[in-house]
Length: 76
Image (cartoon, rainbow, N blue to C red):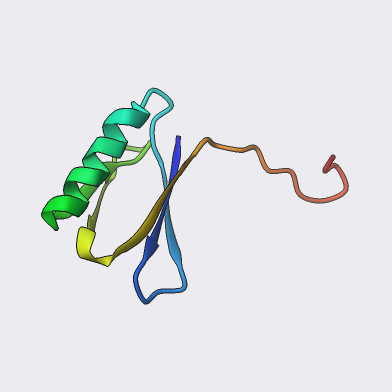
């Protein structure tokens, strides 16, 4: 599962690839809890790295699934 996080006053987004077996509802609950308590949202990506985002700086969170991207002449 992919998560895209928009940061306040920043043109860039954070893109985090979570493990395929990540529970979407649990991650959404963690995001909501961090936003409500104004704490740090901690996520662990597919490679086991931890990413912390201060919830006060989060503009939006977008949940998606990984998409295979094909670029070039072979794109359909």
